[in-house]
Structures are given as structure tokens and as C-alpha cells.
Image 1 (tube, rainbow, N blue to C red):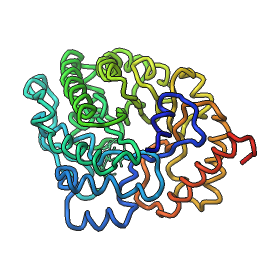
Image 2 (tube, rainbow, N blue to C red; image 1 turned 120 degrees about the vertical axis):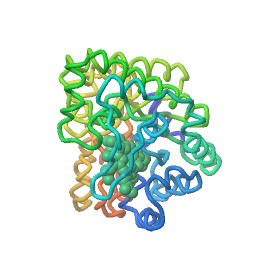
Image 3 (cartoon, rainbow, N blue to C red; image 1 turned 135 degrees about the horizontal axis):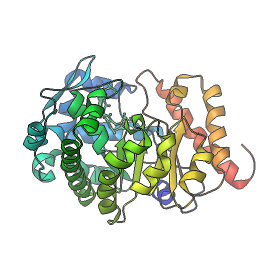
Image 4 (cartoon, rainbow, N blue to C red; image 1 turned 120 degrees about the horizontal axis):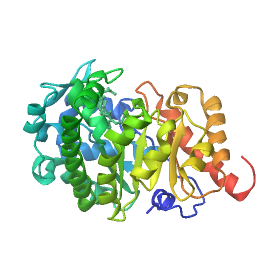
Length: 348
Ligand code: CP3
């Protein structure tokens, strides 16, 4: 099996930098679009055979890890807050959670009962992958999940969530505790089912002031990650626009910290500390640029990191649907070839 990704998570030396991409299964691939003509996104997530098929699609491009095909919002339904992916609008939560009564009605559920289809997909994937590359499981972090629950959908500034957090801190605390308990159980169940690493997506936490992160988010993320890290499975702690929060995110937990494209990766890594791995940090839109241009940026990242073990090459955020598949394939090859050359000292 390709051990590159798991070795890098553990900061063991590797000959080649491992690479995978957030949203590596998705609309930029023709095979995915063809399946989406027949099935909704939720059908793909809820049918283990289909979720397995979609997870496998990008592997032929040469990535070093598979990420389970699912969505961070799947726990909302068993919590008692059903949602749909509305065309052109993104996720829509039918009855947003805005009062203490709403929060009290949310359920903390057993993952096998509420999200058994995800766990079934993980078991099926481990057989299908047959050791080829490791499987990454994932969940959303409490702030990012709460932003959807409270806003009722996507938001540009999370004003309803922030106002609940500031004006009703006790309601917010109970909401975060409930989500944290769900996420903690869910990640442990994914590991039990066979996930070989897990990523916690706190995609929107970078919208918070550091003081609000400390008071209203940090203890909850820490409670999840300290439980998950006890399993010994590597944990990637990811967010965007998190440059001012990186030390805090590290303290909240994670074997590997996600670094988006708004930071220099070497500066970010020295702040995080070399006793942690880092994942990132190519601007996702560079995959839209001609490969000759994109590869210069990728080489810069690899040179900044140097031979220090513990770097996983990824984007700062997910692949956008307009990316040509060939650009993805060429980027993966470029990262492999260039990182190997840099390690041998033969130059890029
Ligand atoms: O990365 C992967 O390949 C694994 C699958 C995955 C999906 N969503 C499938 C998906 C993962 C890891 C996610 C995480 C997710 N979902 C996040 C955190 C990561 C991030 O992007 O910051 C968030 C915030 C969500 C919520 C979500 N799901 C939104 C806001 C949307 C609509 C916006 C959009 O891109 O259309 C989704 C839909 C979604 N989830 C798609 C995919 C592949 C879009 C594809 C489709 O409609 O077929």
C-alpha cells in the first residue's frame, strides 16, 4: 500500500511528498457529472455503493489518499434538522435553530443508527481500496456546522450565528456541546469502521476574532479532538482564513494542521511548530491556470517546505468545478516528481 500519506501525517521521512485534494471527487470529473444526472447529491451520499464508486473516481489521477464521499451536513438530519441541497442555492435547512427551545429539540444520536450508511460506505471502501491508498474520513467542526444550522444555509458573514453566540452565550454553549458530542461519536465510529485518518473541517471559523474563538469554539473543538487523538489515528484540523488562529487551532488539537493559501507555508509551519505536520497550501484557483504557470507556484511551496518531514500537499480549499481534469493530473505528477528531485538534491 502507498504509505506516503500516513507516513507524512506521522512526520516520518518520505521520498516523495504525498498529495490529495479537498473535493477531489466532484463536478470537475465527467464520471461524477454523469452519476449526478441520475442521482441527487444526497442519494450519492446515502447509497454506500454509489458513495464508494465516487470516492474511487479520482484515484486514477494518482492521488495518495482517498477521501470518503459524504458531506459535513449529513449529521443534521439525524439531529432533527433536515436540509436539502437546493439547486443554485447550496444547502437549505428547513427549520433553522435560533432559540434555546430549538437547541433543546436537537438530538444526539448513535452514529450506527443515524449515519449507518456512511459507516457502511467506509467498510465497503476499505475492501475496495484493498490497501492501495489510505482512506480519510471527516466531519464538520462545531462552529462550521452551527453556522449552517443557525443561518439556515450559506451566509457571507455568519451574522445570525455570531449574534446568537454573543447575545445568548448559554444557548450557544449548549448548541456547541450537542454538536461536539455528535461529531466526537461520529469520528470515532468512522475510525472504528476503518477510516485511517480523519479531517475536521472548520471551514468558516476564520471569520471569528481570536477572543471569540477562545471563548466560544476552542473548548468544544478540543473536547472532540482530544478524544479522537487517543485512537492514534492521524487527525487533520482544517480551516480557511485561519492565519490569525493557527496556534489556537494547534492547541485545540490535530496531528496535522491545514494551512490555506493566505499564508506562506513555511512561516505558518514555524508558528504551528515542527512537532506538527502541515497540509496545504496551493490557491485552488491555480488549477484553472495553464499548468506551466500553476507548477511554478507548486514548486515554490515545495521549496519553502524543503525536506522537512510532515508536509501533505493539498489546496488551500476545495477544487472548483471548472478545473480541467488534466490540470489536476499534471499537478499531482509535478508534486511527486519535483518533491523527489528536491529531496535527492538534484534541483527542481
Ligand atoms: O472532498 C471530497 O471529495 C469529499 C466529499 C465532500 C463533500 N463535501 C461533497 C460535496 C466533503 C469533504 C465536503 C465537505 C463540506 N461540505 C464542507 C467543508 C469543506 C469546504 O468546502 O469548506 C462544507 C462547508 C460542505 C457543505 C456543502 N456541501 C456546501 C456549502 C455545498 C454546496 C456548495 C457547492 O460547492 O455546490 C455542498 C455540496 C457538495 N458536497 C458538493 C460535493 C462534491 C457539490 C457537488 C454537487 O452538487 O454534486
